[in-house]
Amino acid sequence: MDSPASSSSTAPGVAPAVPQSSRTETTPTLIDIQNVDFAYGDTKALHDITLQIPEKRVTAFIGPSGCGKSTLLRCLNRMNDLIDGAKVERGSIKIRDIDIYRPDVDVIELRKRVGMVFQKSNPFPKSIYENITYGLRLQGESNKARLDEVVERSLRGAALWDEVKDRLHTSGLGLSGGQQQRLCIARAIAVAPEIILMDEPCSALDPIATAKVEELIHELKEKFTIVIVTHNMQQAARCSDGTAFFYLGKLIEYAETQTIFMNPGNPQTEAYVSGRFG
Amino acid sequence: MKRFFDAELETFRSHLVLMGEIAVRQVRQAMEAVVHSDLSLADQVVAADDELDQLEIKIDEEAIRYMNLRSPVATELRLVIVGMKASHDLERVGDEATNIVRRVAQLSSEPPLKSYVDLSRMAAIAVAMLRDALDCFLQEDDDKAMAVCRRDAEVDAINKQLYRELTSYMIENPATTTRALAVMFISKSVERIADHASNIAEEMIYLARGRDVRHTEDTKNPNAG
Image (tube, rainbow over all chains, first blue to last red; front, side):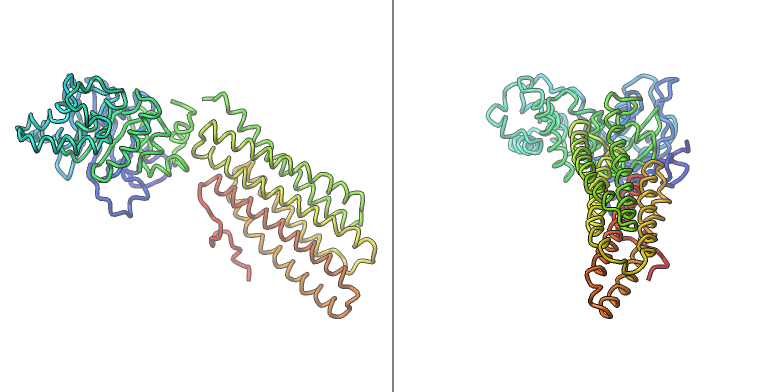
């Protein structure tokens, strides 16, 4: 198969770097991934990945386990730096034209701009209020009125305010699974990031909690750029605007979600979204 | 990777193919009944229409069940949607065949107004279009499907020509009116059958390419007036 970077063609087998029908749209590119190779020690996990993620849209990464989608997601806020021997071997990842792997980039600052929500909700063993304000306090914010305002705004933003407003000072661990996940989303948006990365955010949730998080994703894209890794095909179809399909560390196809699920250009994509392999 | 419910799609496909075969047979027999004034064959065509009606219902049920329980995407989703639409077209083809044979009794009681050469030629094209459209389904040959759409204009032209001729017969000799109208109705039915064949071909292009070619220049005959 041709490298996605080797051509901007949309022929089957060649993944275009930009979802096809968005070429003519005005949505600017926020994350620009160019020719990225990534390895965990001697094991190469990503091969020559090139794609551009537009601003204020939901982009889904799909593919079977081990295809590299979570690895790529974690490259976007350098979470992989925390793993010994893991590194981007080639290529560049730019956010607003700044290469995030440049030596002078402040990784803490980067992760403030690029928040993350994990598969398993991971609230701190603290009160709901403290969970939300933790990041801001680390940044030195101590003004009570300002913190109160952020707590309310973040919890409202995560569609959790009405359910927890009367128990803000009780433990975040006392919430249900779905509420905990929305608390994590509230915590992520409290520091006003530009991008929210979600790594299978609903895989541990029941259908009602999943529906609430999906509804939230739809609302959040007004303000944030969202990249979501999911194994749930229907979730990708429901929530995302663009979908990238990965297989064995390669980007196979990247297109508008409607195209991926209605008329994919690559037979491997078709087989995967139809549940014929993976 | 084979899935436990792949057999359901195969059944769905085979029902559509069966429906196509019955529809083609119905049109052929209907025209044979007209040309040979064969009332018994006409009765057979009427009786067999129920088979198409029942298959249409079965295909709808299977499609709805598959969409509901199997969440099809991509080609499979297009297949299910196209299957429902094509089965509706085929059911209408059966209805037109029935409409045609309903004129047989009337026409056979009087001498032929004119030879049925044009009508037969027109029906042969319509049947060929129908057959080709169904072949496209089996062979996923979208170029052939495009050719079917373009042939529709030939049938339209013969229908218009017959209309003009039959109108002049009626003006010249009002005693021919009943027979002329019967032939006109048959001609119109054949023209509708070609339209349904053309619809099915467009549906097969959508199935193969995921592109909707209805009402586009692609499907028009460049030589048509």
